[in-house]
Length: 441
Ligand code: SAH
Ligand code: SF4
Ligand code: F3S
Image (cartoon, rainbow, N blue to C red):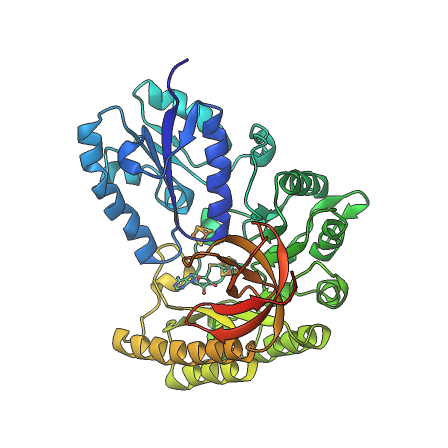
């Protein structure tokens, strides 16, 4: 038998890309490729890319530059670019970096086998269509290999919201929800292979409306069905939009025992003027009302958010409104970014805020958000949490996992294996994790 060819995949961007990379590795597995973690040893290098900010996209070209030497050493090496940069820039990538053999968008990677056949003949392959067929259906079924205790599962893709700064509606296309039965089948399959926690993914996951047995289902209905899957212990979902936070989903946070008390709900800005110019279609006030309703249903819920500072026209007063909103909400975790102009988006034509001012605002916001993160971490000390253990720690005898609030927790353990869920009393808080001790055998 011929020796297996080696595939190196590097993933950038959001969790959906992580999921897509797994699926691409499986598709390439059918073509005789096994994964390697060493690019210099690979027969094929695939970059699964992100276009969300300028830096993210530019990183791809510098990474490709690093591979030039590999290609000189091994002329048979194939190089591919997948994901959102592939979708946004298409053939331009091959013009800028002629050593790239393959460009494939996020909606066409099920065609990788055909595209690879072209590449193997020495031709360039490019596919950035938005096809009619369901890529997940078209993919070959997964090999039944054992998996780690946590997994992502894409249930909804694309976005129709068109926030003025954002490339996602262009790179991922229109909002589409996968049918309920396919998702449940995939979830059961993951559980059979050792998965205990599933995070449902979508660019607007709470707008999910997939075809179910009696018409379209909401995300809450889907979560309730997953709650009945034996062996699945935890359910999460991300990312949600404030306007799609329906009553039944809020109610699920009160009553659904496997749904974890964590919610990522980006707001982007606390200023109504800026929110309007961002085309966010919610106000600071309506966002805070949503948070109040969720917290009434689940008082211990940990909130996380996304922020953009220095959006065109953002004044000092607009920025202070963001700071005020953060003080009012209190986030356990947050991601904040300086506005980055994305060609082709509505905001791209607008005048930029002075970069020095934007940097200063970002630092102040990040200072406040870290303060809140540490306050909430410190408030966990003395509390008992339940931890899904995922891997061994740096220290002998220690394992690391996640609490229900998604805090990384490490503890000295005995008789615990990957995938076990145990009660842990938190004893101290570190920079990006919590330490604790098991409270039961
Ligand atoms: N679908 C999600 C996330 C989209 S991208 C949502 O609607 O929230 C993830 C985050 O990147 C966004 O929430 C936003 O904070 C940030 N982002 C998107 N475009 C950006 C841009 N042009 N400049 C800076 N940050 C951006
Ligand atoms: Fe982008 Fe807005 Fe859609 Fe989120 S809701 S993916 S920020 S356009
Ligand atoms: Fe980036 Fe595309 Fe995700 S632009 S954030 S990889 S949807």
